Length: 108
Length: 112
Image (tube, rainbow over all chains, first blue to last red; front, side, top):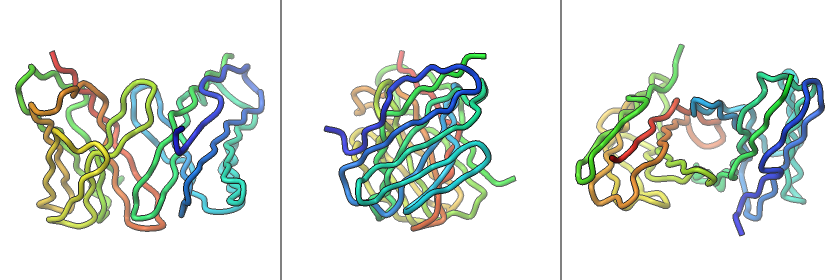
């Protein structure tokens, strides 16, 4: 079993829909990261969180430390949101463990 | 703007040859990392360096080597000992504990 599990692996939705991507982990962490990888391969850091909730534009990330679970939400989704979203947990000593990613496709 | 530059974007290598992937950052970050990404798998840590002239093996260091002679630079050499080198390689940097990470745009290496 992977230490970081994401669901779903693939998600296709229509423009405007509310999107939720889930991340569960089985190890102790100091922080959790949500990353976005576009088709070219480069990765952009979206959020780093250790508790509660963070919001940036249409993106919202939440984490429940007791349940070892985090969610990434996208409101009013748009085709430009199509990408692979990756959850990564920081176990301390700056060593990240990555989920396999969720491939999101938003159709116009 | 500050950032991480990886070059080249695409690289082809013949079997048995060593090849070096470049990673340069102008963010003044102390820590730098190399990850490997294979289809359907999460990124895996190859090597990391938390300070100049020091580096540590990650989870899949066999067949790779690195150096950290300057704060800005963390080149990765894929040696002929790496049995399956075809992959996408990502470099990252961080200011330190409790800070986020900045990633490069990656180098796709193909062994022909």
